[in-house]
Image (cartoon, rainbow, N blue to C red; front, side):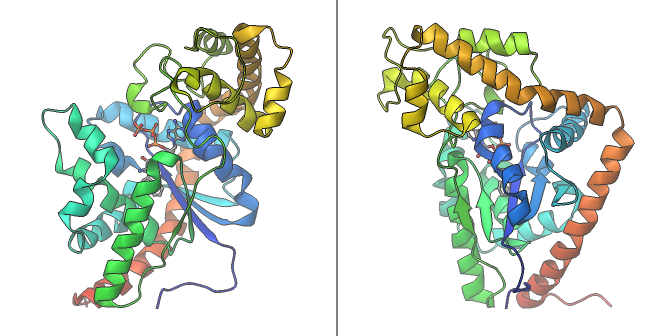
Length: 340
Ligand code: ATP
Ligand code: LTN
């Protein structure tokens, strides 16, 4: 049976790539929710550097981004007392389990993944890592007997695949893995690019001017990007699924998550607004206010890198304890000889 205590809080696992600057989509779609639910769950959050190198990363930048991401998460309110934050490559069980899960995962399951199909569409040469990305992610989740995986909408299919892989392994080798549930926020699960509201805000497009709002961006820059965001030629401020209203829809969504208001309350707030520029100005204001304390805390944390590394080492120790027990169980089931 799964090695799991019975009387404890639900266990949560989620991951984030140190592959670029954390943006408002990551924050509203994932990080903010992780932090708000810290009290009521047992939390494992992982900086997934092994996933990040499925695309080329400059080594020095990757090292910097990894620490920087840890600082952003702590600055945003992740508490080292309530949550375990660690770096994926620090716990070797993640690579080990991925290999074993590869051997029970049909290639066809991976070729079906929409993120894989999107990623290979514009690439001439695609690494095996891009195809195998969801198996590594399944390993992350299954190592910890995870109950809940809070992610943005774009990762839903990967968590569903994780469930399939876990069931297949359990059928072949006996019940080792807990089958995890995906948790998608009701609002904010898909923040769109400010330059193109039909495309998800993404680290991979951060080089495009005006696409994303980086969490550490200066207030002036945030304001400029929001004021320049693409809307439509109309003037109606309402939620809508029509593609031409996607820009306004996105701005209202951002406002709703930050203000914790439902759709009708959000729309009410803009009944007397002075057109789209009033909407944009108000959204810029609240985004700036939301991010201001995070920026301040971030620079304090980054001024003491050894303390940051110490916190990550503490996280690693906790994660490793659990992951190595699961790895032993998995290796025994598969038929590996235990070293003397
Ligand atoms: P990339 O698009 O380059 O793959 P990313 O921006 O999606 O990177 P990740 O590190 O892969 O960043 O995602 C971290 C978390 O943020 C995941 O839970 C993901 O679902 C969520 N997320 C990413 N983009 C958005 C978005 N635009 N809206 C809401 N949630 C998002
Ligand atoms: N693939 C995810 C990051 C990720 C993750 C995970 C999320 C890696 N391992 C485990 C949840 C659980 C992404 O690109 N956002």
